[in-house]
Image 1: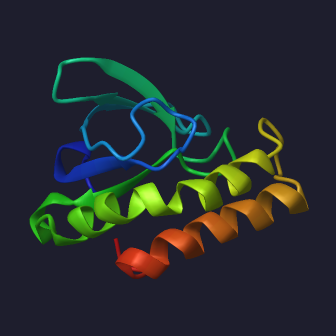
Image 2 (image 1 turned 135 degrees about the vertical axis):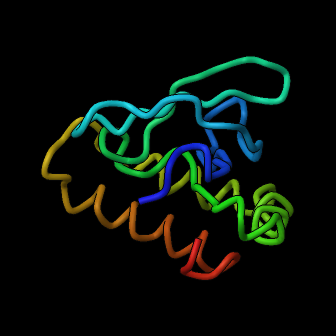
Image 3 (image 1 turned 90 degrees about the vertical axis):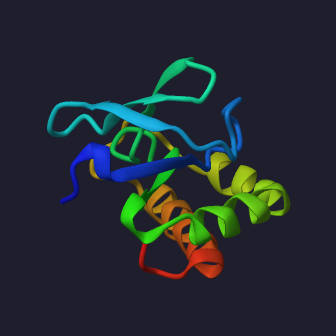
Length: 122
């Protein structure tokens, strides 16, 4: 597992005001929590979830050492993916563990959609 200083998060939650933006992780939550503090270029901060609570990750992480090619690909594609992601996020039944079949299917669909742009290796 990479240290938080080694990754760049990009927001993929279409309902979040920072959709499509990249930031820096400044903290990760406790085990079984899934929360991460993300700071954006303008200094604003927010806490987002890796999918543990939200069902679908609100962001994806890219290794900084890999450069920005995949980040740029995803950020360019996100405006066109928004309707599909909105539909998938709407199917989630959050705060359920284990996740319901509906949530698991939505998560799988969202991950497949993102992978179709950047490939399975992030």
